[in-house]
Image (cartoon, rainbow over the protein chains, first blue to last red):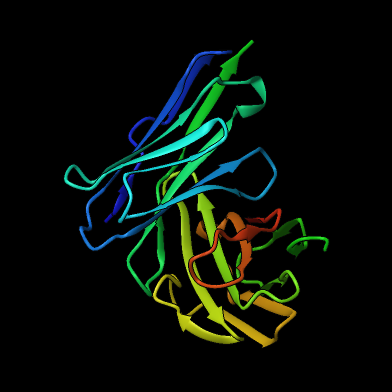
Length: 111
Length: 113
């Protein structure tokens, strides 16, 4: 059973606009969330995290929002750049337990 | 540090053969993770170690899969016997602490024919 879901397999955005990547989870015990970015033929790289005590975490152009009641998190990239084109994975975990990953969203930023 | 190093980068093997994937984590990291990525299931955690001790292997698909971490700088993931459905990209990752973002290796693309 997929506990973390990324329902949009792909997303295309114009350069300079906002990219919004979404992630839903089913386990209400999850309290820590990560976003990873993956380029082809490379391993995922850690991007940004958020714990359940916060509803927003910002790092430069990247902001993650957490809506615990909806069991939903999103990653906003503003402004989007062509180098942001990659596959983005969200991951979730409950304290002391393993991380569960979504299947990824492929972002294409069009110059 | 060179990052997490995995070998080989590509492996093609025949069904029934034994396959061994290798990983060198980042020095000083105390957590090591093995993941498998497929188109259908995305990124799945297979097993992780803390201070060389396996903590959770519930993601290991079946007894054909085994992982070891004989010391802090080396881990192996072995598949014996291999099957075509094992074809995937296998990632190793390490982190300093369970809650830090993990650093991933470049992965091993395994093809079982």
